Length: 287
Image (tube, rainbow, N blue to C red; front, side, top):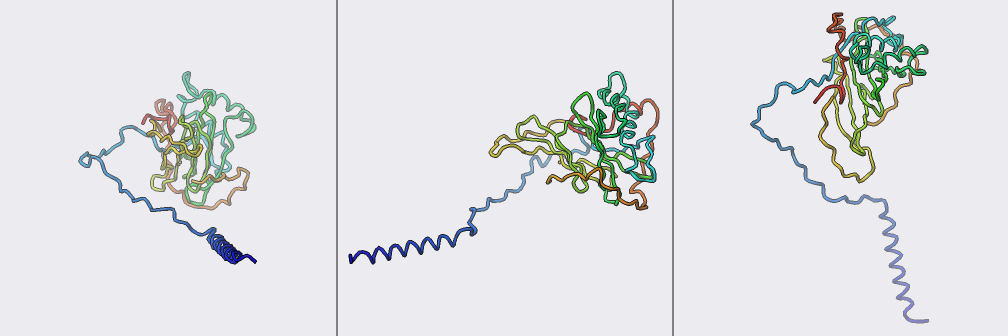
């Protein structure tokens, strides 16, 4: 027998042992390298006097009583969504019915709502119901098309002192809308490739309104996109959650004091009746 075979056997055994050790390391934690050093914010121009008021009216929130809309038994599910939109049209003729109204087609198409919201050519979309204020009672989230353009109005209503009160208003060209917790999240397209705008409206118990708490541009496109988002453009929000089914049974009515007193009904004078609808969005006011 050749003398070198034992040496080969020893080498083979060593290789097998090394391989066994390597297999045992599979799946174990590996270092990702050193953690980058945190950098604290650097305040610029510390001697600059802080502003005490906004430069523009951002119109980020206001409530409005929907006159002429009844809430039978205080149950918001018994409110007719089409009647709510018609009430907004009546209260804001400059936006919907005047000769130069931008959304005259919306007002005209409400005549096609005989089968209710979400049917046929009716501009009023399917309503959704969820407790957005935390008082155990549902709010109404309503959308309707702003025609003849491509924008959609998103509104939230609650019941206060037996009246239907609008507590959120946003007009925009939207990609999708979500309800998450106490928030309404609106996604809108951006003119920057692979980015979108996200607006999050959240109930504020002190203001008795839904306020615009997040307004940001986020990347949604392909990996490796290097373009940086530009500054937020003038105007005027989260794992996606599916909105509740509009066909889900209503929650049992529970007597409770209203979360706040309804604002007094606006004056019926021509000047107040013709004011534009209280709406916030990228195109609602200059920033």
